[in-house]
Image (cartoon, rainbow, N blue to C red; front, side, top):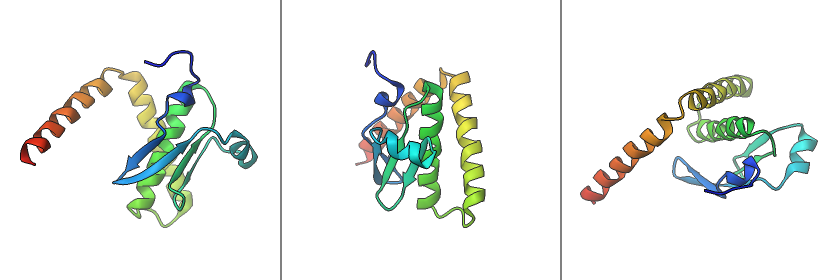
Length: 123
């Protein structure tokens, strides 16, 4: 495990959302400050930007931007104000759930690993 890092330094350099690869940027604080944002999903550049902030806020913002990616790729919302409200609410809800139930993430990872082994057997 990494030590003595800022919360944003734990984020991966890229993530896959619905089989599309998005770069994760944590080095554009000035841009985000100028936009008065904690994060941004740029669909055309396939890039997520996250500002330096408290650990729980990094998680919430990262989940928020991933939800925007899912929303865009699945063409869920026509109304961007509704999208923002739903994404914000779900991201905060999921972040709170994960913080209140830390044992769930390792358990889910174990189940995912089992699923991958099942897929490997078929292939």
